[in-house]
Image 1 (cartoon, rainbow, N blue to C red):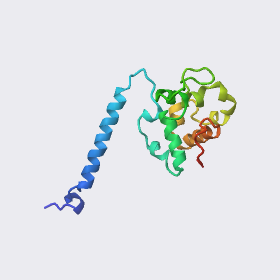
Image 2 (image 1 turned 45 degrees about the horizontal axis):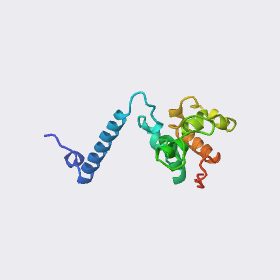
Image 3 (image 1 turned 180 degrees about the horizontal axis):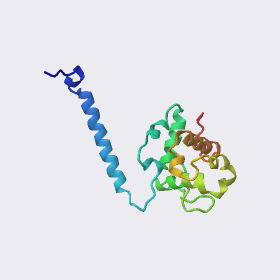
Image 4 (image 1 turned 30 degrees about the vertical axis):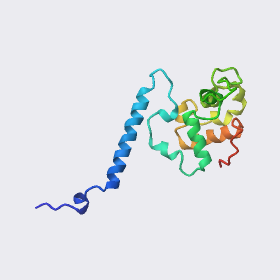
Length: 161
């Protein structure tokens, strides 16, 4: 007669069952959301597949730094394009350089107004791949610190060290 271990005989607890149901529900909704994005519409780094590094982005950093990383990755940050989309009065989506939408990606990678300050970012190994740039914890922290130090977001007077 084969013997079974205690772990094999133990039924899952209600807590485990509920956690599994919630996790499955979120995964289903997230997949449906991602599939609803038109194929020709660019995805933000946060809309890409979750990798082991994704959770590490927020380990060992302050809440302010974690928040700023999330805002940059989701493009839900206090730049003109986001504020315009939220219908903030007297805000246009354009960048001061004339680009039609002032977004985090535009500021970090392309805006000519910030070209002279972008040097430290261009030295990063993943500079050519924006998703990877914000997907590697060390690089995401450097980008967030750079955004904070450029004073693009004057409403943020947070200590992100």
